[in-house]
Length: 377
Image (cartoon, rainbow, N blue to C red; front, side):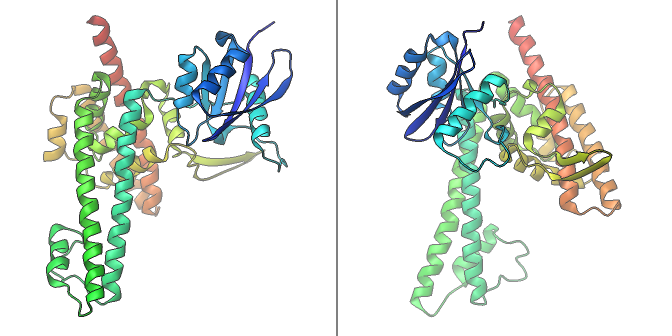
């Protein structure tokens, strides 16, 4: 008879609700402890030995600090996907105690799906690219505030400035736009300052991401460089994919990576009836965003121009061959769907899903090559 005890934890910032599933079948609530390292150590000693425990908790805002603490104590821990935890139909009562009991019971039954836990290098890179993403959202809001303020007062940029928010556009706002009322001048100066401040912030983060990519572990650095062989995947996008996904070879097939990004269509099938819907979006939203942005590049016919040629320098022929094949295949896909009357957001989503297959192929190739090099050394 197995002696493994399964522990479900409902983790919050200040408290942890605990439930224990005994090998004999009993599942009971143990209580609530403070979310503090010393309290967690006492819990492990109480339920021990550590080697006979299996602990799980849901991924959430508390991050992976608890995972690393339990692992350091010799306890097997899984961080599980909250959206994939089984839920009883009609259950309308939710408490911390019930959540912990459900986790312990489902964990023992094998019904939970663990998520990938990043190591220290991946988590640091992930924090950096997410900080840049926050800064980009702040930039959008700052520009919208300034743009709407100018529009409300009839200040429109000259026709000679064809593109908004270029250096010339911002300079025009600073030098040519004025108001008679001092209060409005103060508002204008404040909005312009916000736009310039967030632009400088993004530039600092871009430089930090470039430096982090150069100083990353060798295998991670090799994958980041190789992914940039793909059209539309520049340095920030490549770093984001590696930081969010981790090792691409942990997916046995490309469709698994597509599913983890939430870019696969939803499906409802019953009997002879099969119906597909919009994409599931039950995956990593950060990966989904950068891949969809990259997919827009494939509306243009295949070409390797100056910037892309620079990124190809020093890469293996196998990687550049995959990238060239991706250009041809994805461009054809884009044009065929456009000819069938599909709208462009649908087309870009389909192309992004297929682009993930090429990302997976390049990542697996490079990671396999680096492993062989490491063993040979």
